[in-house]
Length: 83
Length: 404
Image 1 (cartoon, rainbow over the protein chains, first blue to last red):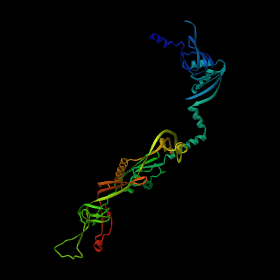
Image 2 (cartoon, chains in turn brown, yellow):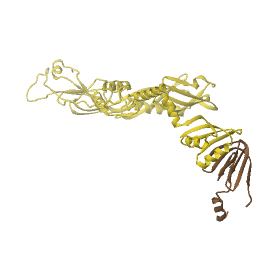
Image 3 (spheres, one colour):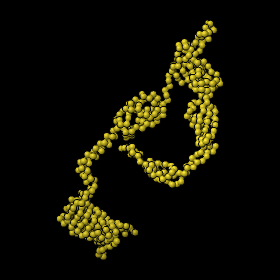
Image 4 (cartoon, each protein chain N blue to C red):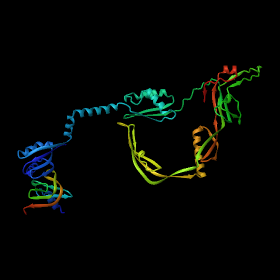
């Protein structure tokens, strides 16, 4: 990765960013929660949206624009207008 | 930390969560139940803010409180438990004011019981206060034991460790003016006599028994100037001094078994454990004994005396096969020589010089008798004080104080 790309990645505060591993997902730049249930979590990251669907989803922590989700994650989707 | 778990009921729970996110209220463990209900955990300090955010749209019920603060509140509200804890702390503190155990190290000629008795007299006993003056106890012990070189009392919690160093017995002060004889303390063949004072009465090669006179302190005055009564010669009484060396014979009998028992491990073993709390002991090896012959190995893991005596150990019973093997002559001789060294160390004084030794073996039904003969050269003289008046009148010594 070039430095320019890395900087864009680091400073893209209104873009969705998600890190998933095993039964854990960490969503960054969370600005607003659009929909939340045991099977689906949709959050707004400013310009775009992230949808995490699965089973027995629990929000372990929600603070400082970061959401920590645990459960069986089946699907991750990104929504939003094309730029 | 102080956390509160709440149940939130109302429409659009996501709106409330978004507001919390915006206002900087941290939430944990958000669980959604249907469209109208969710539970979450919140820090107590944020609860007021949370209640303001939720307004009238949601109903909030506190389910539980966790953390140090509620725990303290709960504990402090239970008066009986508080009294119990205070009593427990007091008991622990109270029992720490006394000495619960005394261990004694370093004694040789005295028995532990003797030392304990003297320590009790000096003021140190199990159950006495820890605030006693240990210097006074030490001084008292020095007074009670003449040959005590050093005593140290070390306090480790409720345990008092008493270390003593015994010195040599005090040398009795000999009055050089007091007349005395030198007599034999054991039987032997006289090898050499050095009389610094007094008159030799034995010669080289003489056999003497215990108590026989070796150097006499009575010396007749031979004066050629005046004639003397041959029946009542003039006598001079001296304090005999000198050394008398004699060859002494020691005979020791030891026994050895003809057959040696060998224990061969079979590889099978039974693990177990044991523990001791106060006087109560339990050992699984006493209950489970799967093998006929075993070697018992124990490994102590916990051994403490505070707040109460406690020990925990793991053990193994290793199965062994017993096998008897007849000893060969070399082994018997090797063991006999070892017994000879032990016999010399235990029975013959260090100052004695070993001149010769011999081993004699005789076989009996199941055992071998080992007769050890040791010839040693040692000093056998001992001073015995006598009173000249009685000696001169009755012609025999009045045994008084004896000195080495």
